[in-house]
Length: 421
Image (cartoon, rainbow, N blue to C red; front, side):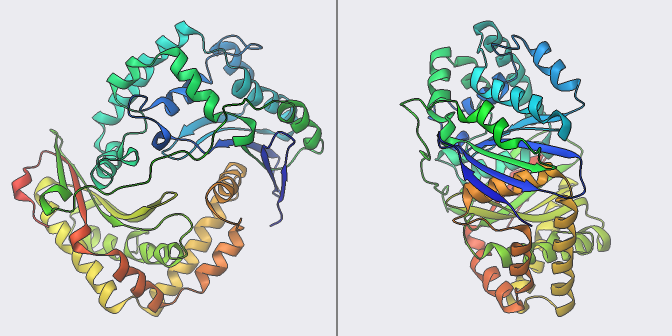
């Protein structure tokens, strides 16, 4: 797949990714800033800023005018905040390319940040925080990362706490926004059926915007791990639920680490599909859980590998024993030739299907330019997957699966004393 990378006069990076056979065009603007960039006092402000971009602009002075103009296009649009980046996207029929870039640039450069709207939106975010807190399936990741990275910003909830959100001052929020929301800090990815006049449109709506003098990039505290003491590597959030959520994991690799490729193949075999080892052993053979899966999360300077399951509280101990047993088998013997072949075709097939969507293409390239030393196309990534051997998997498994570094988090009606690991 071909892509074209350019840099606008104001420093904004642009990647054009043409996709054949589609009539849609996705414009994704990413900023390399998220919750780990925040001071403790301003916890959650990246997410708050993301919300405020939809509250009206100079040209479209309130939420209704802004969203109605997007909705009339039949567009898909949204925004998201993570610990390391914030993104805004709009996918439309390519015939609406001009208006979609107009709207997106208007939001990012000319949002009003009306004081009344800012106060009102605090209530919205408080309810969002409560929604996640009330849903163990959505909240177990937060609990686990807080346990693993306790003591550094990487362990904090992306949305902050209710107390943090309600304490924001307008001038502090604007100062934070102006520090990071600069053209020189933007990554603009346009994927799909790219409008023929896209260069002119980018010039009109993005290139003529100026940087401010206090622009900064990549200011974040390095990661740290929480206490390695066994009693500190285990956390139970008591909650009256019929089903408990279990998440256990181990320190892994940062984005640029080459070991992520064999780790991906290994995790696919361990718990990445309905024919994976954990799915068969925990769900099909023993009926302990409906949902069980393994995977990984990467950051700029660290990462982790995890296993998750939703199950009855009394079955947690049995599930942990099965998980440990399956992990030890991979460490000691690796995987079979058939498993290795099937995992590679599974990864190719699922990646190919996901990238038929122009917004997924945009997200792929945005992450590549943000976190990798050089851009890899999906096909280049799959070529590396094809080269993974059983010995690669065993080597990576030995490096990851260290029992004295495992963290275990549980949400549910569970007694801490009843769980051993």
